[in-house]
Length: 328
Image (tube, rainbow, N blue to C red; front, top):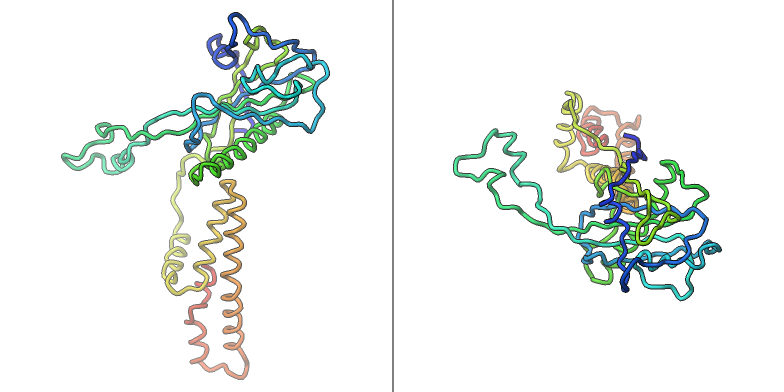
């Protein structure tokens, strides 16, 4: 699957209304002012978070980018009201990212469903995965809206990926602030790998705004990352034997701890946890350096021409710093 695979289809009337309807305090259709002539892309991504941010009911946050001047032909358009956000001191249209939080309670994966596949059936009298009561957890679903001017309404998958990166950055900044303000360490930034591999989105041109709706909205699926798929082959015999050798020296091998941190760094890097990967890699180097110097010293003294006795060579080959440990 291509990283930025994009598939368009015409959204149904119900979907368009659900995404774009904004209720006005007064009766009748809301009037947001003159839309203008400059193309203004409306993007929305629905992100299923692995945590509950503690905000629900469509409440949200808005981040406005003041680095660029506002659009001159949209000075009369009330973008903040259209986004259901508080008004700005000076009405203007600039690129912005709005986040709307919703809480969803859903059942977790049945605890014994895979064990049941392995055993064929559970012991007599033991409840099956279908008979267990649902284990509910709450988590947040965020509708992330990105509004950005563009010379044309046509855009590539790469540009869509850039906008998604901006949205994820704003979301993580908001989650970090929420976790710090609530003193709740379970609320914090997420990586792409913690999202579903594919997310639902909608796109449209605000110039087609009619009343409370954007006409001609289209839905799309955005591939966040490539799924690894199912492994079909087991490890070969050489890998198994090497693993047994590493396990044999786990208790006294000096390089076991650095290896553990090194592979932890690689896993963190693959998940997008770059800061954690740097810390783990640095710890691996810090743990390995003195042991490496000690091993070099022992081997160098063991191979001096002045002392090549069989007993000394035997001690060097059986010390904890042997080649098998060094490889681990």
